[in-house]
Length: 430
Image (tube, rainbow, N blue to C red; front, side):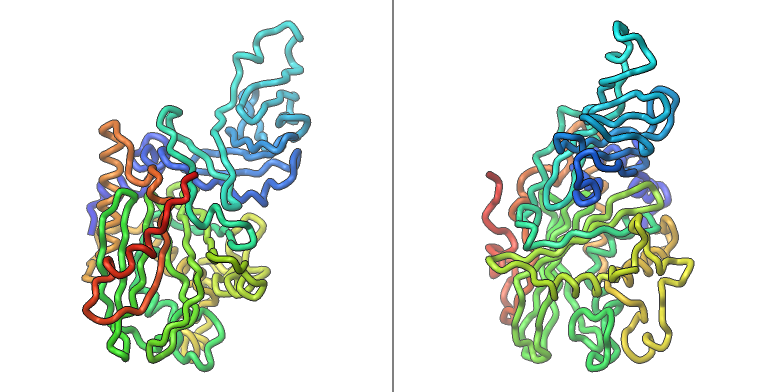
């Protein structure tokens, strides 16, 4: 459990909060590149860590991320005209470039130097992995680009989506590092007849052993299950601060422990919109020569609960808390343990059901919660590092070489010795 004071320290993300100040030291996903694909196209509202922003792509293809409200009379620049190298406020015509400079001010004489004194708050951006990333922290402490292995793959080898979750960011990330919940929340009552929400082959939970290592980027942890064959099924995950979880995507495991894994990895970011809302980015990547097939892409959409019509235009779920997350009690009785369609939708339901910010002083954590406990310790250590004037963990280049994996190994073997070359691949730093 956590005291209310520590819980506040971890969950609040405003500009002057401890966690908000720490998060601003990382590259943060702002939106998908596809949302502003067209130069001079419509601007898009973005809210990050409680800040109201607007994103746009200018005539030359550069992406700007600026404060939402015009500094003249505070009209929203979401209403603006994106034209000829800048975003123009429709109220009085003030125009700004991607750096936030005022490049035209029709309300002043041409000889006035007033435009040079006006600037929007503007944040640097970069495009990587189909995502527009931004850095909200001090200029002199900007970390290297977030060149995760999945992010530098061709578009044919990855899927990236996002959906709005109505709860605090930490609930979404803790759900990602909680490996034991998969055997319950995402399991089938009867795999032979189940049609939705299936992950894994277990019709009843198996005993699990979790081991967690603190690293210079966050956590590396492994869950180990004993198979009927007597071997170990090992799944190795990475949690990269502040909110990125990477996990292996299981495709094929025989009931008797025969191995037939497809080389795919998945992950998600729990990016704070504000204290009580989170934009969850989900990605899946295939490594190797073969691209993702159309079937695999559609399967990931369905498994994730993002089938056509499942999300609104602003990425909110149609089946939200007000519609009981679409739970079907007959399906829950006969087919899947939760009765909710889609793995990600199941996660959203239980995490949102805790409330906007869960009161962690009411928890009673057990032996399968080691990764959750370690995550909280790592986040508190990151806050302390920033408060001491240092860089937080997870801003170096070690994240470039991380890959989540799963393997079947003989009992008695140490997964660290056996699998190190596979969960820490050769660095991709150019």
